[in-house]
Image (cartoon, rainbow, N blue to C red; front, side, top):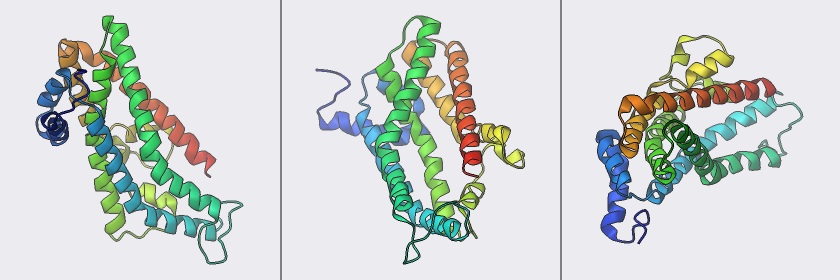
Length: 246
């Protein structure tokens, strides 16, 4: 039987129990992954939590987009007869809320784990991609924790928001981006260097060291290089998107 495809209740329970242990005992999660912990329970819960965050934020995003369209900030868009979003924008927002978790999230996990695998493969001549994907999946719960906290804050803190730009600028800041005023590539790059991404990186490095049977200091350089390149790419597209969006 494939050790990565558990069919018994105890094995599935162990996979679900790994989710809180990522925060409290990450070493035990890495040990379980090395022993064949299944990736799919973690992915299912990640998708559900991301969907939940999107659904909670959807009414606020919809109302702010209505304000943007009504004030002329979205060039060429007009409100419908009832004062709501035009159908293309409405379905685009709904599609992002649902499609992001269902399609985008798994794709991102596959791509991120691939580049970590590639870096470790080049450095050491071999790496277990499937287990690195599982590790990427479970360590992603640290980032999802921030997303949920930030969503609850934006949704229920009673903030005065007047546009979609306010939604971004009013998000909780746990990154170096808080030290830089204004917008631009540097600010967007520093936004990637925060408490939760660095926490995720630290846990991932520890897990990768166990999976690779290497010292933490040995696996750190290639993983950090991939992390920094990913941060640069994310900052570039964020900057490009904000400028394109006006």
